[in-house]
Amino acid sequence: MAYKRYKAAWLNKYPAIEDLRIKAQKRIPNVAWQYLETGTGQELCLRRNQAKLNQYTLTPQFCKGPLHPETKVHLFGSNYDFPFGIAPIGLSGLIWPRSECFLAETAQRNNIPYTLSTVATETPEMVADYISSPNAWFQLYPPKLEKDKKDILRRVWNAGFRTLLVTADVPTPSRRERAIRAGFSRSPSITPSFVWQGVKRPQWSIATLKNGLPKLKTIAPYASGADGESVANYLKENMRGSLTWEYCKILREEWKGNLVLKGIMDKQDAIKAASLGFDGILVSNHGGRQFDGAPAAIEVLADIRKVVPSDVKILFDSGVRSGLDVLKAISLGADFVLLGRAFMYGLAGLGVFGGDHVIEILRQDLLNNMTQLGIESLNALKLID
Image (cartoon, rainbow, N blue to C red):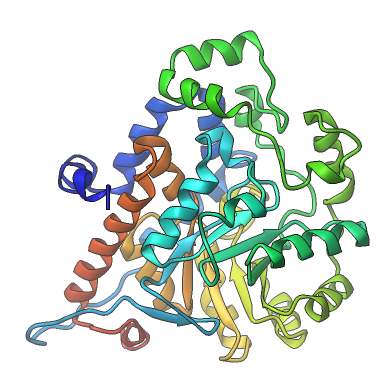
């Protein structure tokens, strides 16, 4: 595998996700960086996610002799090599061209899930050339129009995606003021500022020239026109505020694969989702990108785990930057963890194999910290205070 050629050098130079974050900022235009990095409002929720994660501690147990930690997990009837996967990132082609295909390949090589967003810049049909079930997951922004919903579900299923994450936590677009100031638009266009930013980031610019400006290709066929403004208008009018419990109930009847409700922070919402037959609940505040007044996702995790049946899987994201963060989430009730920004840092910072390097950082951190804790099994985290 080509990553092996870079592994030793990269581990010495970029041993942590934060190193990739610094590298990524130097390689992509400011508008793309602000889109990736920003929260909303004063970005208190964004900072709260990591601050609260940092406050949680785990107590080591010693005198265990040689340990051989195991990171494999069983989820939704499938085996994965690690207890984490790649979260959906909308418009990820703006951050790095063809990122969906590169990250899908990374997930397939390393046997973890990759979640393609409805508002990604590649279609499920295209991404299916690089990944297959059970590694192929899809995030649905629920369309208001029944015919569009049915057609998207048909396309996703035919492309081999079997796990569907239904987004509940975007009832309306958030403002993301820092991204607005940087000139972000969901339909990127050539402006003097955009050109100047591209000139200062030649590697990104060359890749973008080869692939064209990013477009929301999955939903483009349903818009009134192929131009970016028409697609943006379709997104605003037909994929916002459409999710109801009745919609969820019907979706559960229609989708024959694994179904996860994404963005749950309230116990009663979690109980309702479980009662409708959802296979999983993703505890998340959208990475601090939607509502600045929300608690940190890690703060509500344990309470949600307590109120839903054990056969309903609990997934977690928001603020995760290390293997230790993954272990903390599992200790509080998560069965699986998703990371979004971390993988985009790797790809934007190092290119095609940047995602592989993120996995290696997390793998080493998981193994080291499991040994420090004195455990060989992820299930043993339930016994750690």
